[in-house]
Every structure is written in C-alpha cells, then in structure tokens.
Length: 422
Image (cartoon, rainbow, N blue to C red; front, side):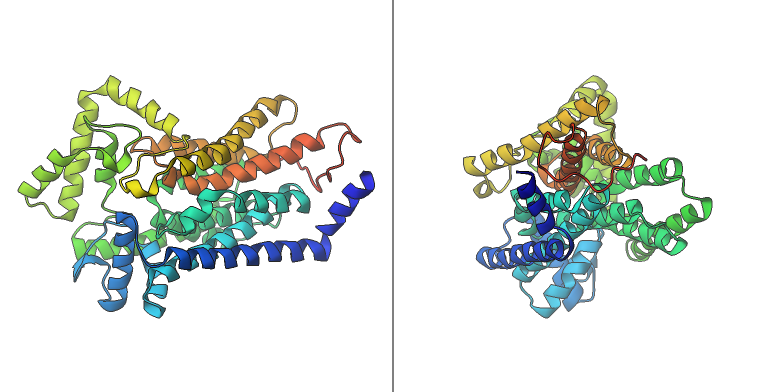
C-alpha cells in the first residue's frame, strides 16, 4: 500500500501534476461551453436581463444605461463592462455564459495555486476536483451574474497576498486596484476589502509605503466610477444606486429571511412613484425608510438580523423564478454544501490539536464576515457563492493539516510539502 500511495503522489507531481491540472481545466471548460449552448440565449432572471441590457447599450449607444440614453448607476459597473465584449463580438447571452466558464476555470487555477502554497500538489488537485464537483459554481457560471467574476478576483487577490514571494510596491498597487474592481463587481465585498486592508496592515504588517500604494490603487479605480456618476447623475455614487432598495428588502414590515427580493415593499415603490423621484432620490428614500423601520423596531431588527445571518448558511432560497426551483436541485445543494460546512466546523473544533495557519484564519474570518455584512441587507445563496471557494480551500487545507498531524504510518495519503506556521 505505501508503494501505491507513492505512485499516486508521483503521478501528480512534476510533469504529471500540470498535465492533470490542464486536462481537468480544459475538460471542464469544454463541458461548460456545451452547457452554455444547452442553456441558449434565454435569460431566466430579471437581474440577468438588466446586466445584459446595460452591456448591449454600452455597445450600441456607448452609454451605461438601462433605458435608452438614460445614464444609470443602478448596477455596479464592472460586470456589464466586461459583458460588453461578448455582446459586441457575438451579440448573444450564450457568449457571456462561456466567458463566465472561462472565469471559473481561472478561479480553479488560482485556487490550485493557493492550496498548493499551503499543502502539496495532491491536495491542490483535490481542491480543484471538489470545486468542479460543487454544482453551484457551474450553475452560477451558466447565468449572467457577476458572482463568478467576483470569485475569480477575490481568489486572485488572496493568492497574490499569500504567495511566498514578497509584495512589491507595484504588486501592492495591483492588489489595491483588484480590490476596487472586486467591489465594483459586487459591492457586498466592501467590508471584506476593509477587513483585508486591516489584515495586511496589522497581521501581515505591510510597510506604510505598500499600504499607500494599495490605497492609491483602490481609490483610483473607485474614483473613476464616482466621477462618472457625479458628472452624469449629479451624485458621486461610489458603487451602485440600489443599496437603499437592498436595505429596505431586508428591513421592512413584510420581511421574511427566505424571500429575498420577493419581500412585499410595494407601498414604498408606489410612494416613490407618486413623488416622481429620480434614481438617486429614490434610493435615498428607500434607505431612509429602512432606517426609520430599524429605529422604530430595534428588537425585531436584531432578531431578523440573526435570522438572516443563519439563513446565509442555508441550502435553499425561495426564488421569484419558480421554474428554477425543484426538490432535486434543493437536495443537491443540501448534500454538497452542508458536508463542506460540517467539516469546516470539525476543523475548527480540532484547532486545539492542529493550530490554524494564518491563511486558514483569514479564510475563516472572511467567510463569517461575508455573512455578517450580508445580513444587514438580506441573504441569498447567490451572494454567498464567491465565498464558497474560500470554504473549499479551508476544508482541503484543513484536511491536509489534520492528516499530516496523524502519526506517521497511519495513512497512505501523501504528506504535505510545507506546513509553515505563520
């Protein structure tokens, strides 16, 4: 048996390691392309139609707008701008789906690099296999949603930061710019980026010059979008103009943690229409209405907050598009997500035996923080998906470290290459 274990290890090291990785990624991308054509050009969700419409208007009217020649900041800008390329070249949503699968394959590559830095090629390949077998990633890549792009950006940022090579001023600026693009793809990452800034300042102990370069890269990208909004909308919206709506959906009298965007806020929508509010004023009205509800219902708000936080880790949501719901899909999510979450909890419980590495701590804090911030608004599985890549990385790294801590000779699995306590 030891010889067989050694043979498996040799097969995924050196030339075989990269051959196996490339084969997995190419095969997965081909399957993704086929899946994209099976889905075709039908856009199943309202959000998809909005993202695609903005991308088409960028191509045809050179305007970031939902309605013809009417500038908007209702959606964050990065994903529609990226979608403009397939919209221009092919003019079909299926091209956007294929692009998403390209992003997903790049995510798997950097997930591999991240896990390999902490463990060994064996476990790095294992993380890729787990991610390929995680159906939510493929399902999301098959939609015109920004979560796949956001997942790629965040994994890339973490890999650049935790790579064994030192961080130069240029790399610090790049990480800051990528962090800004991440927030401009999915604003829910803002507290994660703030956490990340504190992490590199106080835990990684970056020098002040590197922090300034990071800050400059972040502010520069955000500033471009804010300046555009100030010039076209009269307000320097830094991310998007739907934050008030999202806050109201999670903090109003008809709130239900499972409903998400299906919560009945019709009375607020009608009032905004009666007042004939523009986009920015309407979002301010929604935000103020949510804050009024919070201040008048403090205990209920606290209760709802913890409900939302708990449902962040749920395996099902009620969808406005009922045709996309089924018992089979729900069961698949149950039996693929909760085992990962369960092992994650086991790893934490075993921390007394095998201490968490610096990266494991970061993945843990990032994952919990994402749920804590999302619960301020409302929680959906879709919002959590980019962070599920962190969960997979944490689970695989944790498995490697726990097995490595077992007495030698108790297993045939290849032992990690490095186990540096930070």
